[in-house]
Image 1 (cartoon, rainbow, N blue to C red):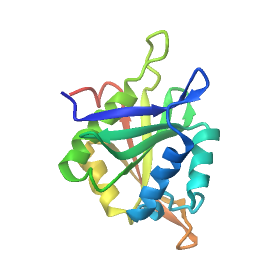
Image 2: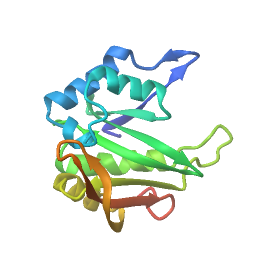
Image 3: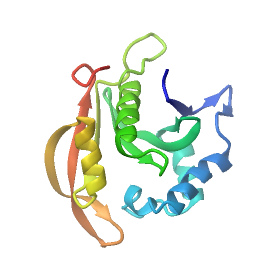
Image 4: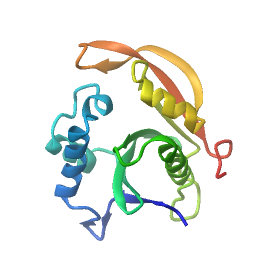
Amino acid sequence: MKEYRLLPYTAIDGIPTFADSFIRGLFERMSQEGLVERVFYDGTITTPDAFLQMMKFNQISLFVIEFRGEIAGCCWLNNFASRRGEFHFCFFDNLRGQDAVGVGRDVVCDLLYMEDSAGNPIFDLLFGMTEVANKPAEFWCRKMGFEYLGIIPSVLWNANLKKSVPAHFWYVERGPYGRQ
């Protein structure tokens, strides 16, 4: 039995699966746990309302991660093109260590193996970047078994440093990453 659930934020017959206050609450929890500057290092999202607006009105697919019956984080996909998307993760304090790797692998597989209404895979590739200075994210990506392309200089803007910073580039492919 799975210890996690991946819950999509979507509208079913025009009714959202989560209330606006719940989505704002995800950001508030990020803030309480000191995660906002790591997740939104570019400084574009600084308030619960800005987070809600991004998730509701941009081309983003948000998923809530529940672990052992509690909200344990979220992930989202954006920058979609030609059977690929960019992934982003934020785990809360109740999902750390080996649990974050195990649940993370399952979540990535769930995302990578999503199908459209005709039963065709939506994605062949998911990719992401982590600031070189974000050692916990680098450690997690390595433990996850993501493929590594290297460091791209000056690819991310860090609002606190007020300068562009280098980032590690990671990816996973449907098939090679697989359901193990």
